Structures are given as structure tokens and as C-alpha cells.
Amino acid sequence: MEFRPIRPDEVPVWRQFQEYCFHTEPADFDPWMASKFQIEHTRSLFTDGGQMAAACANYPWQLHFEGARLGMGAIASVASLPENRRGGHVGRMMQHLIIEMKERGIPLSALYPFHQGFYRRYGWDVACTWIDHEIPVELLGHLRKYSGVIDRHLPGQADWREIAPVYQRWAASRRGYVARETEHHWRTAVYATLPGRNWHTAVYRPAAGAAPEGYLLYRFANDAPRKLQVRELVALNPAADRALWGFIANHDSQVKFVKLRQARTWPLWHLVDHTYDVKSTMESGWMLRLIDLKAAIEARPWPGAPNGSLVIGVTDEQAPWNAGTWRLEFENGRAAVNLAPAETPSLSASVQTWAQWYAGFVRPDQAVATGRLSGTDARSLALLAGATAGEEMFFFEFF
Image (tube, rainbow, N blue to C red; front, side, top):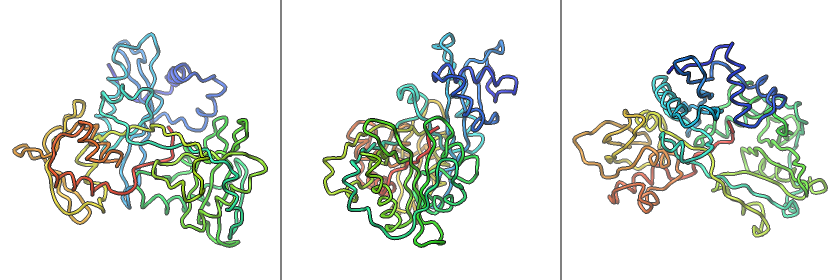
């Protein structure tokens, strides 16, 4: 079988896969094709007879990690037609993707699964949980007065270059947020053109003519009762955060609720003094894979890690270059990873569990308690816990 990007004459077939598998009418798919489709990021698996058996896209994005940048393959649009399913085609395509990303020097990969168990077979695992909050706007009444200036832009009227520096400053020191450097990314992955995703923009400035220090992307959801849905609220300081929430609060004559998706550690209590009236629903998010365990660990800073070393065992059926015994040495916020086949691991786990640890999604003691991590060496567990202490890996993009 052949794995490769599609050719221009194969675009209609690739598109048919997407429309059929994701239940999208051709007219609704046209805006996506016109704005987001990039043939160089498509991948497909073909039978020996030249028939397309599975299709996907893989976007070569980068993630911010506390001042560093790490490559991530954002896998999307994975599809196969029902007449070709149960033949292992998607699985073989995933194996090709893993090898290709390793060869291209991309250490991480993420995807949104149709079924977590399926992708877990190939080394991905859940590494993100978010909480969808529905906040009665009346609870925000104490925020209606604020200092500074809010510039409001209707959908399609905002200039991405105005808020891009705010996002860059905000995301650069965090863990896992996607680097946004091109107009194409802002137009397709942030200001999406799909129906129902036309976002208003509110930009905060401390004074008229001053540089922006925060922004809000939002839309009105025509639920009953009507709601204001926040896509992103990015603030560089408490004054910006306060003003943007004040702007939201002043929609009390238009909406009854504010919908907001945030990481599970986001402090809801800083906004309202009676959280019982807020409806909060936790959901699993994207899955993460360590394509190259050594490169992924060495490329990012570890500012919370105490100096020290440990030996870990890794199993990885799909990426044998990750499997084996490794010595991890943390020193002054950096890590060195080297094979140590003659040593005995103090802690051992699958590559899936190591990805969850890497993202800060699962603490080492939790992994031990659930049987995902074997070993009881207290010093090693403390070293791993210190390395990922702090906020969890998170990003806004859906792909």
C-alpha cells in the first residue's frame, strides 16, 4: 500500500471522504475547502490498485512551552468509507504518520478522537480535560464598571494583527498553547469561517490609543434562553481581565448566560461569590502522543524540576525508538535523556502514560494508584511530580 499526500486530481475523492464521514453537506463544506484546505498537509493511504482507503490531514504546528517551541503534528479529518472499514487501513495510516513525523523531527502529536480506545492502540492517550461553564450573567453584575477602553469589532471586521502580539506575550510562557504566526492560522483556526463560528472581537486598552493588553472572542448562541459564548478571553494583567469580564457583564439585557470553556484548573471563584448557580460540565479533550520521547523531553524547559536523575522504562509497540530503558537527568531546568539498557528502571509505564505525565494531566502518584505506572521509588516519584508541577498543558484550537 502507498502512503502519501494527495494529488490535485484526487481532491474530489478526499473531499468525498470528509463529507460522508463527518455528515457534512457539500454547501456547508465549501467554506472549509475555500479557507482551510491545504493539499500539502493531506495524507492518504492507497490500496495496491490505487484506490484511496483512508484519508486525513496533519498540520505541522508548534506549541509554546515556557519560552521554548516544540513541533506538534495536529492530526485531523481522519476518515475511511464504510465499505473499506475493518481492514486495518486507518491503523496503517496512523503507523505511517508516526514514522513520518519522527523523520521530520516533530516530537509531539495531538488529535481529537472519534473513540479514545481506537487511538490508544497507536500510542495516543487523553491528556486534556476542560470544563464548560454556564454562568448566569446576573452573577457578574459587580463587574459592570471598569477602567480602560474596549474596542468592539463585528465578525469579519477585526484585524488579527492587533491582537496577535497580545496572544504571543500571553501564550509564550505557558504550556502547550499553539503558536500563531500567520494570517492563515488566525483566519482558519481561530476566526473560523464555518457556519455558526463567526466571532465578535473586543479589544482592551488601558487608555485610548494605548497598545492592547487583552482581547475577547465571542458570539451569540441562539439557545433558549439566549447565551453569550466565549471562545477566548486573553488578558495580560488583572485590569484587562477585569475590564473584559465587565464588558461581558454589560450584556445583561441581551443574554441570560455566559458559556465559557476553560482548563479544569481555571479559578471560577475569582468571578462569582456563589458558584452553586454556575453549571459546570467536565469533558475529555484532545489526546497526545510522544512521537519522539527523547526529543520531546529534552526540547522543553522543566523549571519546576529539582536537580536529579532517575531511570524509567517505556513500552511503545508502534514507535520502537521510544521503547526501552532511559536515564532522565534534570539539571537547572533542563533535561537530558539517554538510553540505559544495563540499568533497572525505578518506574515503568507505557508511552501513553508518559504522554499524560508530560502534559501534566496525570500526577505520578495517580498513575501508580491506578496501575498505569509501576514502581514505588519515592525519590523518583517526587522528581517527576516536581517536573510537571503547575498548570496543565492546554490549547484553544480545534482541528
